[in-house]
Amino acid sequence: MSYLITQGRYTGMIAKANNRSGAAGAAIGPGIVTSSAVGADLIHQIPVGRSFYVTKLMWYHALAGTVLLTFGTLSNAGVPAMVQMFPVQVALANVVGGRIEEELAGVEFMLNSVPLVGWNGNLIVTATLAGVIVAGVQISAELAEKS
Amino acid sequence: MEVANIYDNGPLSLVARIKDTISVYTAKKWAHYQVAYAEPWPRSSPLRVDLVALAGATAIAANGNITKRLIPILQVTDGEMLCVRFEPLDDVEGVIWEQSGTGRFNSRNNHARVDMASGLRDPYLAGTTFFIMGHQREMNLEVQNPNPIALPQARFQFFGFRYVVEEISPDLSSVVTQNGQPDKQKQEDIIRQLAAGDKSTVAQFIGPTTWLPAEGR
Image 1: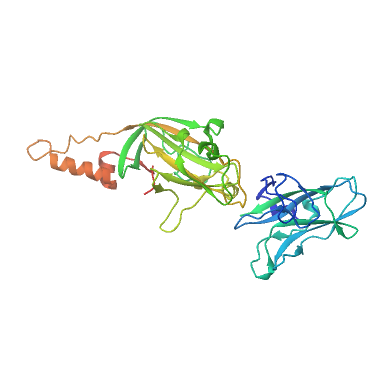
Image 2: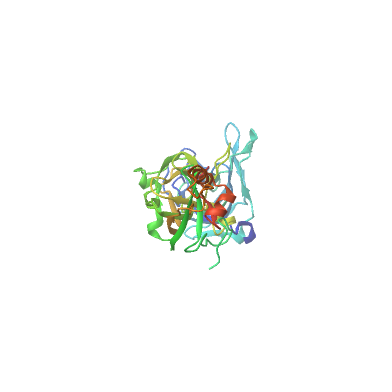
């Protein structure tokens, strides 16, 4: 993503204590999400009237194997489904991985209120290992909100 | 130092120099003062307030608000005037009221707010300029949280200039009847015109002045 896309907008570590594991999981910490076996772990909830770009992602895990991370948002379907926003990312065991702004596509997360086929614009992640959703992957995100 | 227009879109500057005259709309009338003293009010920790703490709360609720309340650090005495700009340090929106019931930055159907993005397009925060004049005419601040989560702090930073002003008594000695006696009726009319802010009357009896809105109108 071009730096110019986010330059001048409010950028900051999203540390507002709403990150959580699992679709209805309890908040676990302001700056980091640990993936759950439920999947669709909420990393950032979009404030009303705003949109945002992801400017940095970090991850780490110590699981036995390579984890695949799918970042996206949730559809408005009756049973919300992952709407993938970035290519799948590879997370090697015991190695801190990540993407910085220049490496990420300038995908703008925003509310699409069309029933069923739209999406809520929140940033979520699902971690899988050998096709199975796994818990225990630590993920942090930094964003630039636009308002 | 250059004297700014009151909402200049650059760094905040004096709106009047020492010994200049200002005409201020406050308490529903125009009053006329001479500036006796002016000094900067630098951006610093004493001019910072956390509305969550001020409200005795632990958080501002998700998409909630903290109702308008007096900001003690901005209280002044009679003869003092503040020209202040401000911004939130946390992701909240500030709504200004003066005289607690009169909104600033509002119109018939709207009441604008100052948020964290205000300073991005308006780096000197010129659009946040407001005035506070005298005792018991305090500013109240309401806070809105646009986030879908509760926030533990709602800090606001103020900075600007502080003025000490002295009220001007117009010289009405020249307002006399044909036989040289003070023309009480005309003098009262002039005083009423001065309070109404009549431009030509002010020019005649007060002189050149800078017009300031101390409160919303």
